[in-house]
Length: 422
Ligand SMILES: Cc1ncc(COP(=O)(O)O)c(C=O)c1O
Image (cartoon, rainbow, N blue to C red; front, side, top):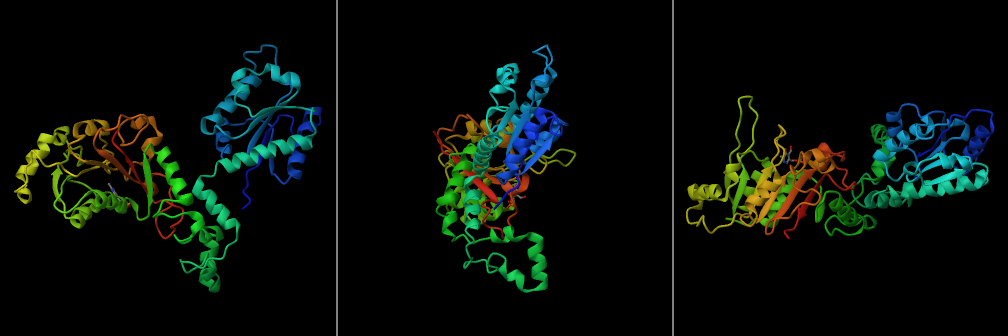
């Protein structure tokens, strides 16, 4: 598929009839002759607007000439605006190629902190525009290749092959919709790519959700890296199913489990399906009606043991000896109540085998320092020594994942991540 990622040229002389203007337009023409789109503008304009541009640019060429410099080197306005611009782009994008185009002596005016961020300095009039264009296009293409994560890349390659779809779903890449007027509308509304991408789990080129191999496996390992987990598994059908997977994997009939009294119903389903015996931790509720938090004292092993002793369904169980199989905590309630996960891990490590944080509403926490240790898996955390940590997250809630409805292949509605004890 041909994507629209223009090379953006910023040069105040872009439309001028001077040598600088002629030079940069010759380069722009050479780039266009190679089939790449060019957008030429004459000023940096509003920096925040340009920060948006970085996501649709395949490269930036910032052109300056010597006459733009004033005598006072350190505070030169052109250097300052160049620095601000590059800083703004790099804040969000460390990879997009940025070139400065100028006279050879111009490079001497540029401080190291600017030069360091550049892919190159293009010496005006030293090489032919055709040669420079080829070089920039090569870098722009390799940048565009590098931004594709493993699964999306495999999906693009698959679509590129123009393979016929003989597997489910029965609309066969959208062909079924072409046979009726309303189907045509549906096809035009979603667009061919969306329908071609709705393919079966059995398409080998894309890997296997169940075997965690191929592009899916690669993508899961990439997600584990991003979400600071040892393992990450993509799951269709939301955190509801992810929660059940954690439980089916860890809990057997008659196991003692510790559960947030206000847990999601998928945890109640898990209790029913596994046949576990729950003891509940009780959240507080304030006079505004806001639920939570569960007081820290409820997490003390002695407090949990007292609940086990008091539970009529656990009559024959020795509270001092039994180790609960799992603790499930709603990590971010609907009201935004969060727990310090490190405190909970430290209190229960070795007493509860599996610590499960239901982070359905918290997948974004890994991406902002604000959340600190108020989410289960962060960078450079000390691991529990004995207990396994699980986090289940709805990528389709507070991240930009596509909802679960029938689009199976864009791999995740939900990620289930785990970290092993040391
Ligand atoms: C705490 C909690 N866990 C799990 C879920 C289920 O999430 P999903 O819709 O991804 O199945 C929800 C849904 O609102 C939730 O609030």
